[in-house]
Every structure is written in structure tokens, then in C-alpha cells.
Length: 319
Image (cartoon, rainbow, N blue to C red; front, side, top):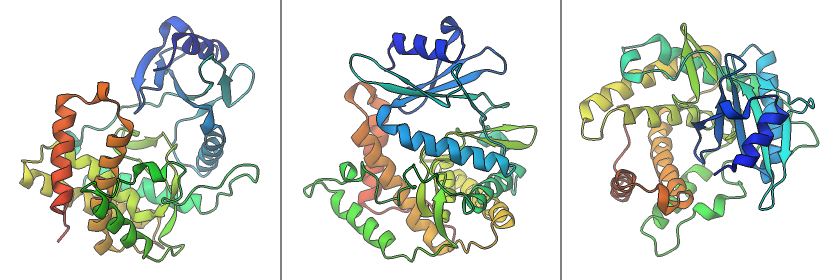
């Protein structure tokens, strides 16, 4: 929860009307929108411990924008800062601002058709991010992007030894850590480009929320897009989920290879990465959601998800 005093101070520093700011979302309910000046300004609040990572994120976004990618444009404060630090009696916050992008998240069912333009553009967008990031050099005063298994919070996800999921987590890590980290297939990824982290407008994708950037296999970014899109249909609608997965994977793969042809994208690893994403998401939610946010619907979802993990039910198989 972001205190009202912090919201008001952020509005002042970015020359916005405090009365106009409204909640927009975010996993921690930390993203807000000021509708004026048009088309709107998005404010994102984070703990001050994320200061260096946020500086790296802005430098990365600026690099990708200069390479021609359509991304939300960061905005400086009245004091000409990309990031403002706001002190409180309990904890300091940092806040960044970006221009609201045109369009809206795509309606996945409405846009769904075999080889839909959206799907191929989504893949091409991810491929362009990976291709251009290979030329990005993190400023020397900032930390490099962490490998996926070297985050400071990594150990907090590991289940206790008596937890039924412990063996599944360790097995998944052993598998991933046995793979070669060839530069053609492993590097900095977006890490969360699902359909609510970009807008689709006039046949064009504009991306945002690059705060989960990390080093991983490029294929994982495609697996993330696929995994989170499948939930537009309930798990019981197996045929629809499988058909959507097939068409989305075909489009993602086709578009990606046009933008980043050097990457191999070993398809046999897709199943492993989809299953890993489910396990990672389950543990992340279980670890970071407090009891107040665990609604009955979400509890049922997590219970069903855990059962699928325990019986090793594949998320989807392209074959």
C-alpha cells in the first residue's frame, strides 16, 4: 500500500494534480495513473532497495528506444530526475514516471485466429528486444543483469525439504542448470511480456514494464507469453487451450525468427520451460501474497496448480 502522503509528494515532483491520480494495478498495487496531461502519466513506486535496478532499467529502455523499438517513454521530474526518492517515517520509496501508451492490452480471444498478425508481431517484438539488448552495455556504476538463479530473493522461493514441491523445484533447477548458456540462446530477456505488459494499437505493439529483466534462455520469454495467455480459457476447456497454444506458438516462433534468426530456439525445451514457469509462478505467488489477497478463487487456483505440478501434468506440448 502506497501512503497518500507519498502519492501527493510524487505528484508534486512530477508536476501532476494529486487529486487526479488513480490506482492502475501492479503486483504490489504500486502503479498509478494521472490522466492529465494527456495521454496520461503512469507512476510506479518501488522500495528504495530497487534504486540501482531501476536506473539500469531506464538505461536499457533508452537504448531500446534508440534502436527503434516502441516502448513507453520515461519522463523526468520537475527537478530533471529520472527517479525521485521519497522519504517516509517507515520506509523510503522511489518513483519513476512514463507516458501512458496508446491502445490497450489485446483481447486475446477476439484477436485469435491462425497466424494472427498479433502473434507474429509479439514474437518479432521479443526477438527485437533480445537482438538489440546484445548490443547494450550496462553503465559501469550499475550492477549487471542477474542470471535467473542468482537473484537476491532466490532462496526465499525454495520450498522447505518437507514440502511436496521441494523435489520438483530442485529437479527443475538441476535440468535448467545443466543446459549450455550459449550466447545465441541465452542472454537478457524481458522476463514478463504477457499480454498485459504491452498495448496493441493500430496493428502495433508498444511494450512496458521492463523491471523483471534477467539473464535466461531467450526461449523462456516466449514460454512466458504462451503460459499466461492460455488462462483466457478455463483449464477444463482443453481443446480450446490446445488450439490457442498451437496458433500462438506458431505465430510467436515465426515472428521471433524474423527478428532474431541467430537464436536456435530448441523446441524440445519449450515443454520444460512452460512447466518451470508454472512452478515458478506458483511459488512466487505463494511466497509473496499475504492472506488478505488470497481470495477463495485464488486459493482454488493455487490448489489446482499445485496438483498439476505434483502429477507432472504438462502445461502444453507442441507435439
